[in-house]
Image (tube, rainbow, N blue to C red):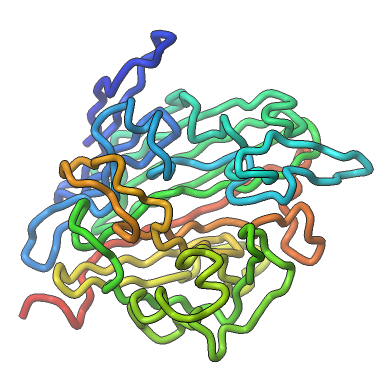
Length: 360
């Protein structure tokens, strides 16, 4: 089932819609046309009680004014580009900078701050889906080429949220996208996520410098606070005396996922468990990287749907994407998008109950 409603009105008079997808078992997701944003994702705990497991606001003004980019679609380039600059096919490109001397998440007016159009709605009982579309003109925030991006959100029983991306450009450009949802498996507004247990089956991660730009090194996780190959809580490492943890004010690092084949398929990138609710989240993706962000930028200034302030580590992000600053690191997987060769990617957020924490 799909319902559509008005979420708010922009200063220019444009209407922002809220589109809710729902399965017969009660699993649901609410999507906003502002930023192609995942506002709510309702899932049952081990007792069958439903709650949203992503942080979200109830007013358009909060989404427009608050930081954090809760649940939004990032672009043109998710994460950071050093000095807001890259060289492509013999030409230098200077982007608009919005994090000191660097560009992050596409610039000051990234895709998270745009009104997307509804391209299609497919109201099927076993797979409701909405597809949103955005056109980015040549020169937008300094990026070359006219780019068209579509993002579809679909639900699949019993608890999959499938996010599919497709992008094309009429000129060579660079492109990287992701969803910036903050999760809390105990329920939105329930407090810290530091007791959530994380498994990330990655052997390597990208160290950063003091401005959170990858140094170019690809480091093994052995013997570091970044080793989540065996389940462990965020609390075990987030206050460690580790230079990388200090630089990120917690975790804000990209993991290098196992290589995909010539026909990419979503493979497991992370698993998170929360004991109190019994909920489990799995992230599967075709992307080469996964950014773990421990909610370091949540300041408590804004209140969510629960009426409670979102403070540091009240949510975590698992952002499937290409590597930060890849346009300036030739040994990273390429983010170059060329005419006639569209970008396609799938990320699945799979919610359920951890078998060991299920109700007896």
